[in-house]
Length: 432
Ligand code: HAM
Image (cartoon, rainbow, N blue to C red; front, side, top):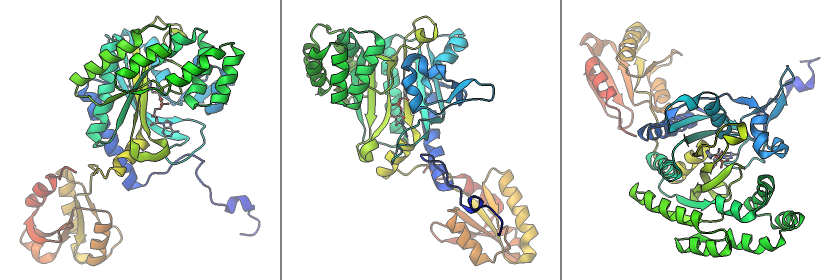
């Protein structure tokens, strides 16, 4: 070791805020992802994919240069300003303007992938995480918003997460009340979202809007049934009732979808700048501080990138948080298990075991075999440790009868079966 620089002997850790996922965890994540994809397909959404890196401008054009602090932004070797995507919505709108707009409307798309945010990490909040994102472009507001909320709830239901709170608000009414240019609205909404009241006060003072502080603070506390919408209209004096009536109509429509447990929450302000209409968030109360499993709403971004206005609405889940929510509720996820672990009884049966292995695999059964030359009992320990369903013991006596000994690793029961019967049993996989 002499002469090696010390730094080369130090273990290399993964970057802060990122995760490694082992086989068990990855299986659970893939199971959840599969259920979310199935739900999206049942609702007529189709998958699209966009790059992990985008031009920085895609994120700064709407949110201003301040957003760079929250991004992984860098120059590439050609001196171009790029960023790792912090979410999908900007990319989908860019893709819509360049190509997707030629598809028949409405455009209903979803994506799954990793996104990056330079945030202070804690449980459930990472710097790299996976989002499941869905958007509808080109459907009128009411049917579009109802469809995305219904899909969001269906996604959680299909994963088995039951304890959810759906909170729906309307950012358009707040924007109308502010009567300042969108950049200034953005700053006020930002401090409202963060509940940073000293900063809110300063911002309102800068804009000579001090009188708005009290109604704004009252407004974001309004939460409950339809009556809070009437109070909201009174608190935001002069904005009218259009957005509030809209939310009532939306709740009615959602009831038809079987989503009857919506709470109106006028304090849903959302951290992203582009929302202009209905906004919503879904919490899993079991998750502690980072309890928001998903968020979304109606927004206007096409105009920001030079396109014609078009109704847009959507949402995104943090996949990690859905998995945590499912685990917190003790949901048993349908994680695939290895069907058969083939064990030769003695070295002389190794070739025969490999034959059995091939036959099982070709029949569509997932099968593995001892690679280390271990004895039968050590092999059974290994098969149990990797949660295989059956141990297939290939011994000389059974083999002569065209059979194998099959040990059900859940019940511990053992029986002699033909390979056809093993295959038939293995292909009958339990649901979860
Ligand atoms: P968002 O609320 O910023 O919305 O993120 C959506 C979800 O991503 C959150 O509800 C949360 O579950 C998860 N999430 C956010 N930050 C983190 C983090 N640091 N670590 C782990 N999970 C996190 C959007 O991204 C919008 N693009 C949603 C949308 C689509 N709106 C309209 N269309």
